[in-house]
Length: 92
Image 1: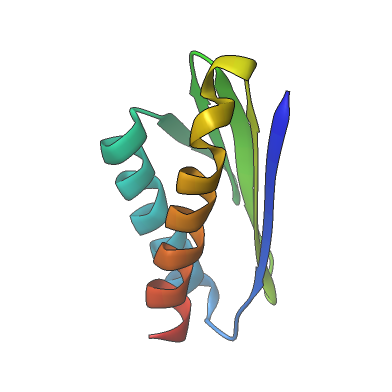
Image 2: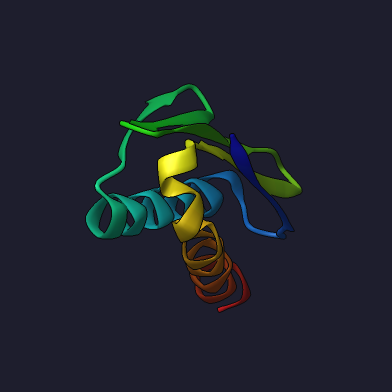
């Protein structure tokens, strides 16, 4: 199992942080066929070979994904996409 663990601090209000998370999830869903659903302020990700979550706090967005061995070669690409999206969404 390979893990992607990204923490990003933010100064967004709750609604804008949630919108940023939703935009990130839509992009990951489109690019990597990952399904997601909200459970309160936690978004759960799942697809064959991937599971994880995204948590929103007033100061932080935390993304954690566990990749199966079959998806391990894509780890750096997925992690890079998460960082890139968060850079755009949070830092403007």
